[in-house]
Image (tube, rainbow, N blue to C red):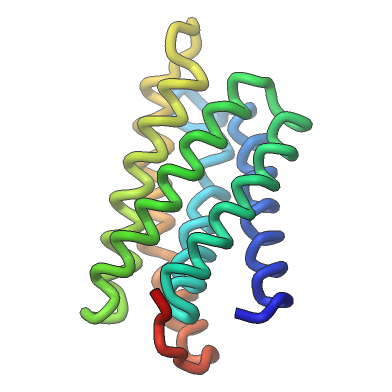
Length: 175
């Protein structure tokens, strides 16, 4: 993976996490916050890096994105949201990379769909339980709405994933 590709992927991850941490603080209703719409793009970035360069580079992007997310999150969000976001992000990204890699030889859509479903579910459980548990806010309904939107967007992101696969030259996946 070139330094330029690594930098672009890390910046994309950082932008997604930064935007999501700001947007999650703005509820749409009792079932949803704006953050649900932006966060699934992190899985798209991870899956594209994993498909193109393999799980090793994808993990490096996740850890570098995590470091950037820590700095940015504590700057733009409350400490509790920042801690929840960073914890959920790294666990979900590493799970996404592992599941995707195990399924990479199947149909083009199977690995990103299953990996995104698993990691979005884990991400949602970790984030919402750390960020809002014990508060008077309707965080359980936000978590359910958030997960539903993440999964729906995950399905919708299969089209750009496929389109971008056609543009990317295949590389043997290093471990």
